[in-house]
Length: 253
Image 1 (cartoon, rainbow, N blue to C red):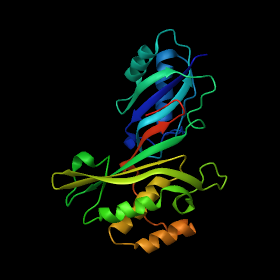
Image 2: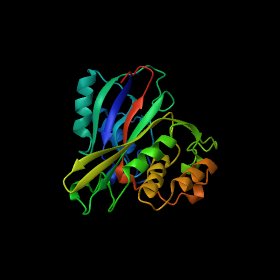
Image 3: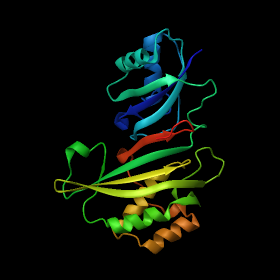
Image 4: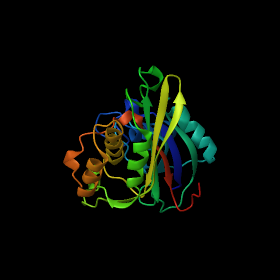
């Protein structure tokens, strides 16, 4: 049976994460229902990452097997017709028989957005964490650099596979700022070979605590080096997080 690899974008606001659950709306369930409506075939969709409730994606990678008599572009358009408006396939192609979007991934890249303005902005209510007051971008640059490299990241999460392996390698960790009316948007980009459960949201939350002066750089470094997960009380909300890219050996972008 043909195996298809697709890039999926979605607004996760109204979903309980990617992974299928009993009697709750999830991204995986919505895609499987769309395939069934189109083809009459019940299929299992496998994703590259199990994004949490409220987390978005512009580059989630999925794979599924289905009998389809037409070309890939026709399949893309037909599936998007059946998908809800907050989920859409961006690209699709035939995949190798042994391709697995999770286990074959070399890295994943997330972007977290913070709205730093004196007043809330309705247009960003589902896509950015609104923070009042001063945030030191210089300090954020410092904390971000401290996270690059291979480290034990147990201070920021737990192994989702429950194997107690909390060593990960971070390739990119950086903050950028974009000016907007009455304030700015702060974007945190992080790319790693793999992530722990809630790792990015804890990384953001703890860095922002330092950037706002709630915590010192020395305290941040101590928590990171000692792996004191129980001391990380600052976790960014999910709606500012986007799974932007999953990289594979055949991908040079």
